[in-house]
Length: 163
Image (cartoon, rainbow, N blue to C red; front, side):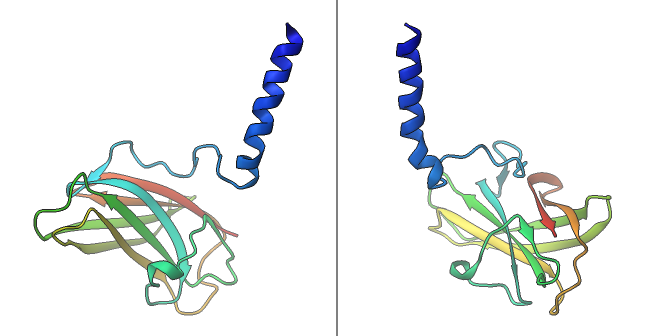
């Protein structure tokens, strides 16, 4: 009997190996601390992503999302808050969010208020903004926490590092 369970375990491991190699099977993201079921203006928070870029926000297809950035190359850090709506929005709308970024030592790095729009017919939306400077070298190495607030409630939390 022990041999049969060993063979089953081996077979299961071999089936999972391709998924692991392709990165399709992974542990839950420990850095994503978004409150479960958080909602913003009728939409559910789907993700909070972070990317680096120049002063002007990059088009979505040019963004490279990461959790770690090189201090010698980092200019602006942008967040992207992705929302999913249960059905197509019946009308245009507007709402405000606030992004707060804090270093590991508790020092507030930036606080950005953003007016966001929603268009009738949308089933999802992406809202982004960022903070930094046009040249590199402005970010201190260390851990950072990014919080998104809506109507005073924390709706998404993530973290990133500057190395």
